[in-house]
Amino acid sequence: MTLNRKFFLGFIRIHILYHASQKEIYGVQMIGELKKHGYKVSPGTMYPILHSLEEEGFLKSRKENVRGKIRKYYQITSKGQKILQESRQKIKKLLNEVMAF
Ligand SMILES: [Zn+2]
Image (cartoon, rainbow, N blue to C red; front, side):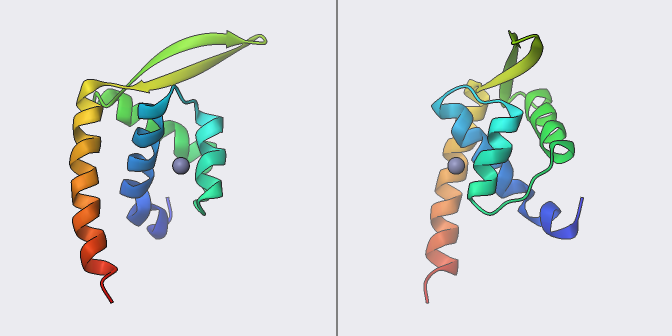
């Protein structure tokens, strides 16, 4: 993991949680979504992030067979909702401070 990626990891995690709160997500789809926002995240980075979010209880997953391939879909948990809500407040405060020029 590059230094920049480590630095932006929190942003990426919040972004993933946000989308998982809207509807179920899966790895490849989130890689594309983040790319649109200027984050280059490889599968080798994305999957460990999803796994740790699940291990920490912020996401839960289910497996589905999609054209012969097992795909893991993730959705947000109530613990995830809570931290997302907390993040929103912190983002607002941070925005107010760092963008106030
Ligand atoms: Zn997005």
